[in-house]
Length: 270
Image 1 (tube, rainbow, N blue to C red):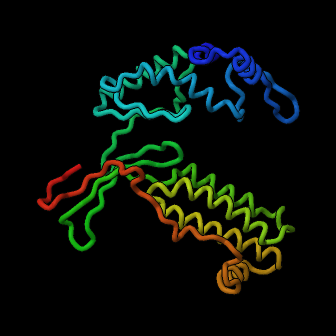
Image 2: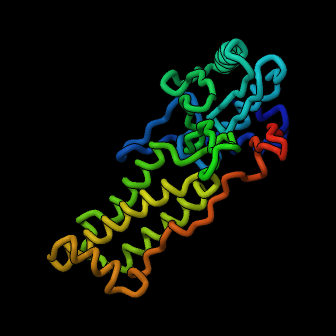
């Protein structure tokens, strides 16, 4: 890793600082563990060092032979035109990682054929799948595009975080404090996942949020859950300040990505 940095950086003070950071230990439940390889997980410089280390893959990747490589930190996706090219790309990626002393995580590594009605794939928290939408009144036109929405893991993380913020041990806190913390999480979560076809997922998360907040109100007053729903939905003019994701404007096509539409003659255009 330091050799990769030294290809562009010659300032010795900077190099010494990076060596100190890489050799820093990681505290786990009190004791400090000092691994001999890798960058400290959670370190402020670790994502940058990861990109520096894996940039060598980007430099030698042959797009014409192995497809388009999309990499974000240690997550990578290769877009290919055929299964043969995908298999060759996977073999090439394994070889390049082996040269760096790494290997892909088998549980997350697979070849997926994008087709309408087929399986999709998860990447950077989103689930991507090729879908076709036809007209409601007539089926004379259709639109085929790559849809994306929060992956199952992202949905579980959101529910777990809301459950943690509304757990029983926090009942002594004012409801306004709990609602404010839930709002902060929802704003950040929705700001990321609004770039996709996420409206249905937003509705599911908001139903979970309302259920949990109503439960907090009911437990604080030692009443039924129905009482909590009544306070949240009707007795409070602004729902206790709880934000809503129902009206969040989603952006299915950030940066005008590709999709097919029929022209006036019914032919597909790009």
